Length: 196
Image 1 (cartoon, rainbow, N blue to C red):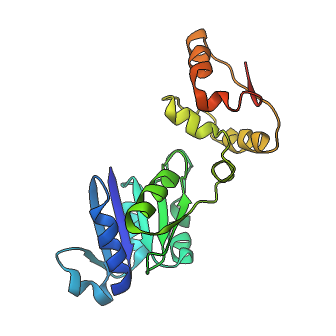
Image 2 (image 1 turned 30 degrees about the vertical axis):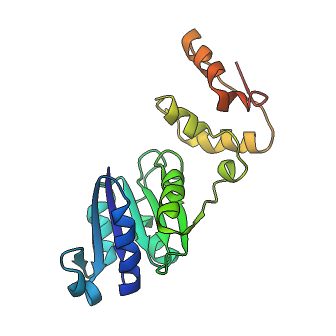
């Protein structure tokens, strides 16, 4: 697991360092050049955040921005490809009070990472994914948990929308698959929406 943390200020660097100590795998902190000299052993200096994302977006699994959400959105926008391939992206304010799951909440694991990291750094997790906030079945999480490949990612939104609106959706597969689905307690909680 490769994680990139990006910050612009001394206060943000405190959050970045705290987050890096509780994050598994390889972690690289990028700190803006205006304050990076103070953190030579902890962070890589950068002049423009766009250059960092240009080099890192497709190469990492997770990105944590410690800055305004608008900076993160504008920076990653040109590199967005698909909810099945984009890295998980979180945004923390520089005081570490709030931690927002911004991108790839399910398949990329941003929502789970957001909850875990928020608990570790004392932040309030902010997750806006409707299936999560309403505690409902999420087809993309189901696929990931069952080692399934999503052939048509465009349908994730349609299926989730139907479930969120109380409509039934179909599920089909071979006998073993159907048997495993029926054994899955989480899926069976939503059995009214899923049928064979």
